[in-house]
Image (cartoon, rainbow, N blue to C red):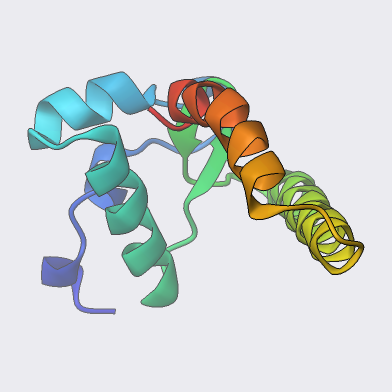
Length: 116
């Protein structure tokens, strides 16, 4: 791994108990929450083991932390697929685009709060 390709990884500490909050990382790197999530995604693609928890981001210190993180990621992936399936079923069942837009207008502020 070429360390010059990593910006988030060097900031992190080992162990879930040392998770660094995203707001702190954003401040250190002078990036937005969206930019930070993109940077982490790219670093993971290049092989960085960056885990996340409610406390922030961290480097796993053992196999148990990796397993726990993977379970969480699989759960999120499964719920995303279930949601997409529900929308597909609703749309193919004759729900109008206006109804879907109404649902989105309700959910969008909540999603923005969660993602920022």
